[in-house]
Image 1 (cartoon, rainbow, N blue to C red):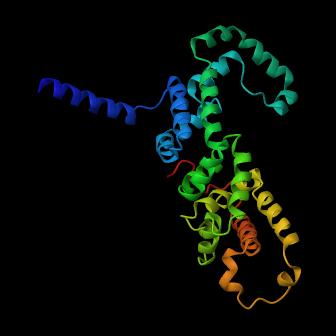
Image 2 (cartoon, rainbow, N blue to C red; image 1 turned 120 degrees about the horizontal axis):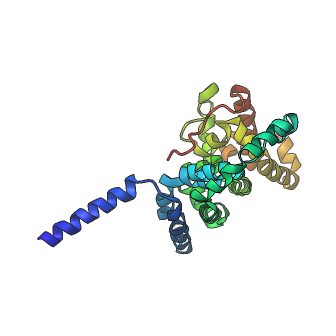
Image 3 (tube, rainbow, N blue to C red; image 1 turned 90 degrees about the vertical axis):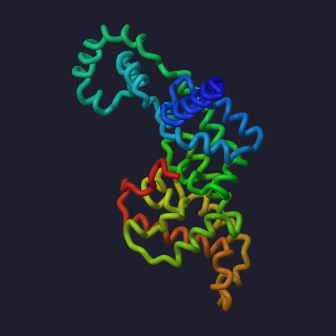
Length: 280
């Protein structure tokens, strides 16, 4: 009985430690290895549930935003230099750099975080570059696809291009569903995009995201190729059943996509906060 109570208490403590204590830089290596194993076994749902609570931490570690990384870089003089400020006040910047020279040995007291940064690259590369995972989140977990688009990771640019091309090229995909659902909703300003349209909200909730990722290009390129292949007589002629097949037609859906993009940008200034960065 005593042994059972000891094991039970240990399990409870382990559970709270795993769920309440934040991950450390050392935990990123095992996290990367576990994620790669889950991906190898096509267990994408478990991988998402495992990583979702730690996305913000992973994002900060990749961008050297952890306090130990920032402290090390500041003491070592490795912070990114503002070139314009440096040119404008070169003498002042040089004096500041010289005055901090004696602080550089103190940087050894703080971990550089280079290994943590490398492990976060492994984690993010697995998520952003695996085609099967992209297909999974686009179909099963669109909220996660929206988060990956808005995450401050350099891998998101290629991911966004492949995601949008994949979605627009498959009639009936999540993008088609969200555009049809959004067309039935008449809102203004902050409510222009329906909240549970996760992919549309990721791009158009903040016009800056669509601008940075070039959200028009993969969709526009696909529409151009579709128009060139399409029957010109059908495109220019009258369609009696347009409303019936509208939301399965790539060209009609593409027009709705660009219409929403333009209206969202006009109602929301670039940089306005829209999609919650780490919301499931």
